[in-house]
Length: 328
Image (cartoon, rainbow, N blue to C red; front, side, top):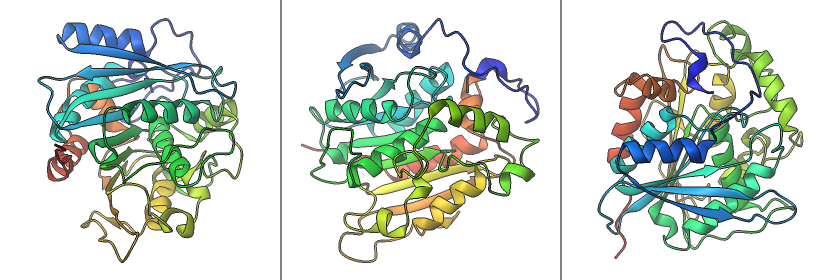
């Protein structure tokens, strides 16, 4: 969600007005951010085809280019809001921790204009563009909230293509995937929607309104990761990534859905990543539930200038241990 709607106090924040009139889109905001920070920014025009609207991919260069990696970050905001300075600041710090010398951000079509599966079609083209200059093992995919949903949707498409979206094949797994408070289900039925409703910025009513506007197919694994079972996610080539980190707050309504997805991947909560069991199982998965935090807390922290909150410490420590390998 856009940070301007929230106070810096307790988790009982004023609920956002959904689908506002957006005057500054992701690209405009990122351009201003990069200009202020003296960062080089390049943009690519994406054409997903199949009657999906065009999109833009923006790539910020963080310094001297090496043979290192690139962070492809999908911003949250319920598919209704553009990226914020919180997303840009987080990406700027996360990329070098992962040994990435640039970060990319997709400017996808927002609600109410971009209904399902528009953003997935655009994300596929974003990754395809990056693969023109990087090997899969140089690419880290990340996202928060709806952006985490989009990251998992893209992984699902890589395993089993959506029938209306162009196929994209990888020659090897992605370096890593990071999901921060991802939307894993489009239903508001798990217990955490009740016991965390008073604490979280995304309560059942907000979540239901966002989902209704997005218009996902009810049972599609590409719209909700929890529609896929263990056979889907762990079979064949695994989850299409060498490492995965799933972050959640203990006071968010998505908590039980996130735990259900992590259980599908056999992740141990707060423990060491699960090691591969045999051929085809190349991925290791870790779930961290951060205490006394709500939905996508790290983005709100960065927006307020809090760089070393509980979630950011967990994330940056994990990133420093799972850096992208240099490709010569």
